[in-house]
Length: 120
Image (cartoon, helix red, strand yellow):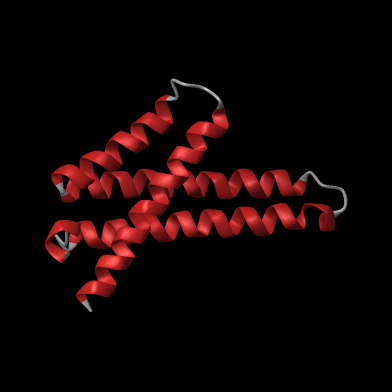
């Protein structure tokens, strides 16, 4: 069971690092304060294994993704033919739900004082 928990934790952290890095590349701006903030918070959580940093990072990710759900629904409403916007809605919601799930997993591991180093 420990190895499964370790794998889940590792995969959620790796997923979030990739998502943050892809967001940073997508904006085409070298100095992106939002991406830098998320990346620094995630690195601090991994280095210090502080539960407050993990909870802060997760909360910010969850709130940002809830905002993105509203933005996605707003964009979807602008389509006159709703079938044209359906692929955008399906892909966007699946990505956002995966982000929220990864943030919830970080919160779970941060509050249980379960760290990646202890598990391995």
